[in-house]
Image (cartoon, rainbow, N blue to C red; front, side, top):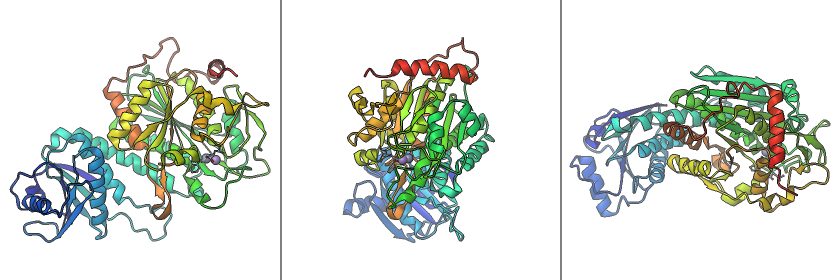
Length: 517
Ligand code: BES
Ligand code: MN
Ligand code: ZN
């Protein structure tokens, strides 16, 4: 889908060649006297277009409009959430007629955030997955023009939103692909494909390299699968080499059977979405390649299947993580944390300004927050606040949950340094507490996207979340100078520290960080 931004009044939008014209009507009185604005004002007065975001009024072939269909869509206060619901409702209504060209015009003044939300919402509502259908009907909309009073004033936000859509749709694509079309190897190839974009480099490690690094926890999850694991390292360099990067770590379980602690059969197909954290990292890099903000970002993706096999890791097995900490695998279905902990240890070698892991980690998070907000955990107030703000701006919202040390009590083990599960209570938090042991001394946040990364039921499919949140966080960080942690100059080039030295340092840090028993 091609997006365009134009300076258009409602009257000019009516003269644009298109199949559907969507007029976004806010709460403020409509003062212009063109026919459509007058019509909208009178509909509002008569109660046929209530001032509630998402309410619609459709017209067919009104006078002096090129488009045969016009949809008035209420956007209330014009804030991101309201624009999003107005545009989603209008595009869903317009979709039925298979329009090729759509114009969305703001009847009143719109800021950058409103325009950005109109773009992402229109893309979201019109997205269609086609890859594994033999007779695919792709999305009908070819071109979407956004009309505003002052295009120049919002063009930066518009361009960023357009790039974000490319990222969201890449994340949706990989999330939606069945596990046999999205193996760790294929994810690795997709990541390598991103290295064609400017400023992006990619390296993909296989089983031997991962073993050499000492990632015994990650390797234990992968050992029951016929598909070889992959550890993907992406780098985006938009700032000086010595500027400390933000590291994104995405859970890339391409299928989660639960392993020996097998999951029930019902809805197990949805465990193909267990790599949506990884997909969100790929999507974020796609957007970075377009936007090219002045910031350095590293993407780490541990990817494998969690399968049931004669070689699978068993409940009670003790594995040694890259940090040196031993882990008792009490439940093989708590595999996400087992692959993420080694990636978090690996992250230390980049001397990061911040590390954010993104994972479809716990069913408990789905129970706690449903599909509306992702779970956010962070030991760092500044990072937590920045991620929360990015969630609101992008309408890809999250909600902070606690990390009191008391929650780690249940992770004690008689046979290893830590167990991979605690009791049922507070399951999303105990998972986060497990990860925190491996997050050392850098600013760290964890996003549990188990409830938000995909939808179940009739609308089953990946949402592309939290690409919007991550891109918004990274671009505002770049805009604010990205310098809350100056890079240390005595360690040579970022990311070039040898593996051995890094693992020793991280072991020491992780041991220090371990809570007292
Ligand atoms: N991938 C799942 C988390 C999940 C479950 C996401 C359901 C979305 C819906 C994860 O690997 C998992 O199985 N977690 C277990 C942890 C438990 C064994 C402590 C869970 O949440 O049940
Ligand atoms: Mn699992
Ligand atoms: Zn999982």
